[in-house]
Length: 508
Image (tube, rainbow, N blue to C red; front, side, top):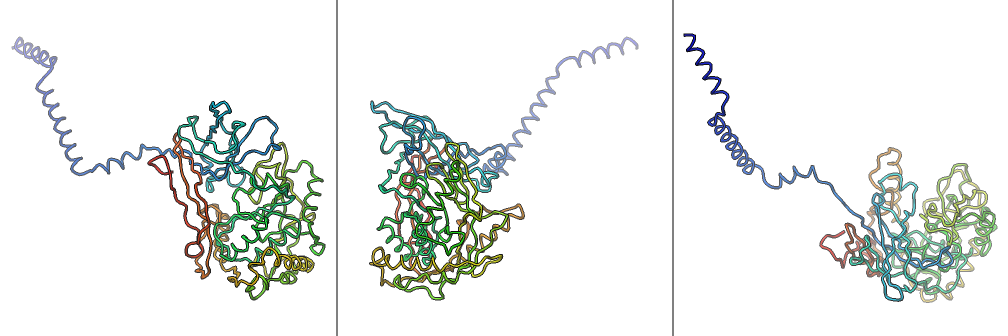
């Protein structure tokens, strides 16, 4: 019996030590059947779009650089401290992206010349602190061949095969101007009465060139600006600073209703602003730009809008009796610059200075701007003022202007000068300002995010531009093609620009 048990145990050990191929085959068949059943169930119940959705968790988006070229200029020789010829490309780009630009030109002997541009963001202040207002202006400066006097090519990579052709703007102005004024763009602009007040005030106090970009404006506003343009007084241009560098010494950046006047405006004199600005720059030889405060000023427009230019008068300025006091806190500002000393201005603050020049704040008691806004029928914390002498000066100048600049429009019936279009914008901008106190904002603070509900019954003019694009490397370069003025769309809106040419099947 003992011998039988030992034999049985030995047989069991021998059996367990060998591979049981039946078990292996069974397990493989079970796994295969489960896999086939699972695959069948998957494809029966889940489609390919569901599989793509599951895969999205592992995808990453690479946007690439998308630069919109706003203008191209040659660097003024007087602003250079090195030899060579340099071009400046002004473009709009996403501040969260790293941008590269290469310039391709041809040497006199026919050999290609490729240089990498130095790129600077125009403003490193509030709009660089977060990505709420991510898109910002930039300038790229690169060396080009000395023989380059016209178009050259730019690309994102050093490969010139996919490049955008850009044409530097050649200055047409031969006359030198002591003072030019860059005005903020006009968008759904219908208030030509305040516009006339602003332009005539700047002209009376020394400015000889007014530069006004137009997005959309009433037909009457446009006709008035055209009349100034024929006299060489007004231009419509987006790149105001680089455009003015070739002919202007001093450049002021302001809104059309913001004007530099003496601290005591009853002392106003013809050409006085040039003397004020030159004295401040002489007192601060290291200043490249001057940062002025502006004071809200009482404004009461005539109850009835003039029906023609022949009936325009500036006597309503005599009713402006108060302006805000100069205070310790500083907030609202305007900028005046020596054009050759700066490369960028963002309307309220200077950006890039050259050669060690700096921004200088001007105390309110030395000089400040007067904000003659349509809604300022009264102002708080006020100081008495007298604008009678200014009104007299403007009336005298206007009479001579009617005999020359506006002789063709003298008796033409004009559309009503109205400020109604500003009401929705005021409400919109106020709401955005209030959002800032919550630290959670829904949009960037620009007028373009505001919608005006008012339906206008007046004809309007708008600017439009066709664009072309080039795919270069993993990014895009977008350039302007055709620019023109045309009748505005409903409600005085400018049309949305379109792409008319491109070298890739993906749009930017």
